[in-house]
Length: 365
Image 1 (cartoon, one colour):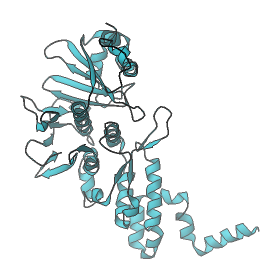
Image 2 (cartoon, rainbow, N blue to C red):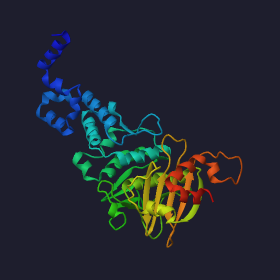
Image 3 (cartoon, rainbow, N blue to C red):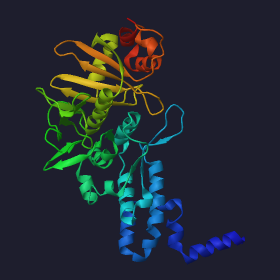
Image 4 (cartoon, rainbow, N blue to C red):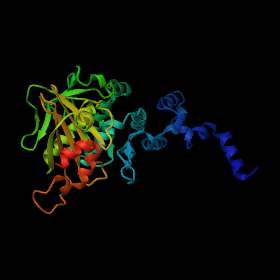
């Protein structure tokens, strides 16, 4: 027998449990529940599932769970979410492993990526023990819709400036966002709008929160509350609204027959708000009364600018307004030059989303 094989056999005989579960991939086959039960039943196993092993497990989970990383345009993979694991104790490490391995981080990571593009956070967002302590135990974490639980932990890392973040506040049975004061509530919505496409983990919510450069964060007036297709759409809409009114953007707008180009605009407004749209990195849908609106984000973190399309019903007509926003630098050398020549990359990205017929109406006429 070779010396190395003899040493390996002795190691298995002396520490069979350690050999099976620590330092090998088999360790990752244990669920968090298995780890907790083993720690509770066999106190001598605590050292085998201590902080070093849990940090290793957390790192593995962060690298393999879907939605936590993005690869864009052939550039290096971008990590969107991580933990300050060196500052976490064993209890917090167990909680971190638990929430990550429960999965479903795709929606909040779309919010994080958009917020990163808009300058509201540094990527990756790094969660801390304070974020994990938003929920006292797993049961409380699971009692909320998943996207809401994620936003509760991540929100305070989305910074709008002037010490204002996307922090959530409990107000009795209701939640507030951004400011802990009247008018900043957002509520679950029950009704026909978006219910056909509703998701239990990411439900529709209504809110009147808005931002403008002149007034800052305020409660929107008007007859109707804004109904967002989901919690994630609500969050993305807030990020875009703040970015639009706090940055210099360029805009082109057209009003177009909703059925032009093989019903392209009608389809974008009426399809499931959760359906991915070719050419978009993410979308956000909402409505006020019978007027539907959808924002279609064209850029990702690999672009040096932010661009999106807003399509919205024109009330009581068969037309749709199409607004293309961008912060792409103007490459033209004169006033009065067409949008497509001033902002060629934005135009190219938008054409993919709008299709040839609608694109021609927006950019070529």
